[in-house]
Length: 397
Image (cartoon, rainbow, N blue to C red; front, side, top):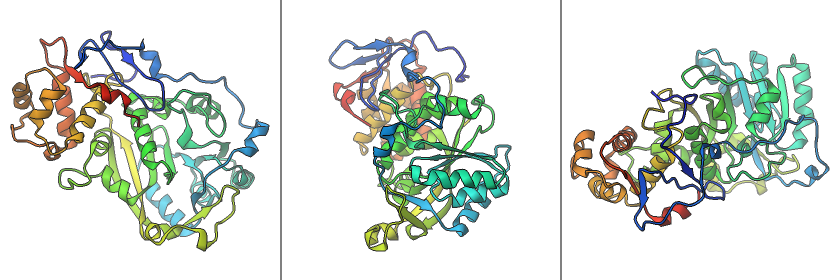
């Protein structure tokens, strides 16, 4: 079985295109319909962003004060904070290290510290940092406060990394966090609220990080405990029983992680602060429709058995490509998709995966898609196993 520390199979190479989240993989087993030659062929090193030299957290450039931050929701209800700590502590494991995203006034931070946890507070708004630092001093010093935005760690466009963005390698080295093998336990738990802006883009970015074992997932199976918009949460957990919500995003998250809905809380429980750390007045807050929505406290734990000999951090993007192609014509039959995706014997693939000719994409569960991909990948006697349409190169996540 493949593991992240193992050597990379010699036959696999990557062709990546510049731009955030823009990828197309071409291998000796893959070909385009129009026989266009592969461009910008590079090696596996493309999976590892160039990291800046280590720097201290105390250094704050003069231009930083001009950085504009969007309004954010924060946990300010002590009752909710206690509920979250009880849920997080209810899972019996050895990991009591929490990375809290944008703790703001530190209500949850204090509850975690009082329970005996070690907390790393990544706060993107400098207004809250002095209060968080004093909170750590008053509660035994188990708190590290860093001016950083968790959701901007390791940008995929590989551009210049500036505060409040950092690289996970710089962050974790300075904090003394060591990597754990993928097959071992959880190295740390991330807790917080998904940004309401670009929530879907962030979900895709995290998926790429998981499947490629980059960013925080260089350090093992990092567990996410995040409040997610109710609508997006339903999509993540959708399956053929919810065909109107079922999509490629659903399949990829369920293949990658065990997903648990831990708690639901109305929007009204969260306070909204402006970019200056000021509480917004009620008349400036969300619309009635948004207030009626709920946030879902969701646990996303990467699976130990995610990677196999045929699904690895090197060829994962072919799996992404297959799913996007399938769900573009979600009501089509599987056999029709097989003809457009791969030159291998479609009937033989159906037989090996125990699927019928009339099976539709929306009838397949996430585990079925993974088995389909691995069956094609391990098929023998074909010099080319995947076909690409050129327009897929221009899809930006």
